[in-house]
Length: 136
Image 1 (cartoon, helix red, strand yellow):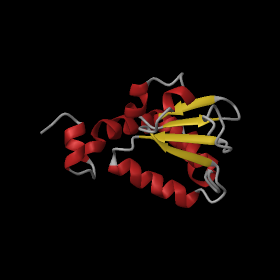
Image 2 (image 1 turned 90 degrees about the vertical axis):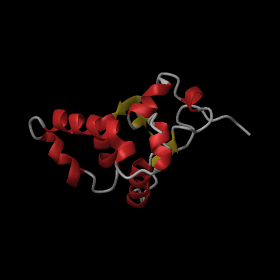
Image 3 (image 1 turned 180 degrees about the horizontal axis):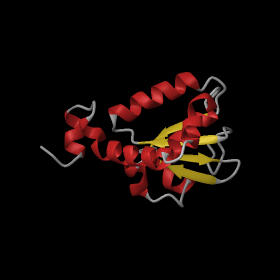
Image 4 (image 1 turned 45 degrees about the vertical axis):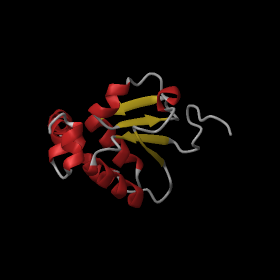
């Protein structure tokens, strides 16, 4: 069995999300339905050897926000920028992402994303998320 390396999934993009977060899992379910052409490799951040595949991404970044790696351009996005590029990569995604061209939309989206990321374990998760968040 060969070890996966940069871009070996054969897909142009890799999305890495917090596999412990139920809200994130729901987002991934939607992505898989929308990704009819198979553009996205979608992995939970708990995937073995993730650090070896993407050594430039610090481990804590996976818990901080969703990551998108574009294998064609060798660029990585996180947070709201990653969500924008993920949607853009999907069929008819530009029908939605035009909104980011409105002045101040990107900074507002990033602020909302950061708020959401800090609170995601309280938004739709169960008891296991409270444990991950350091609460009893």
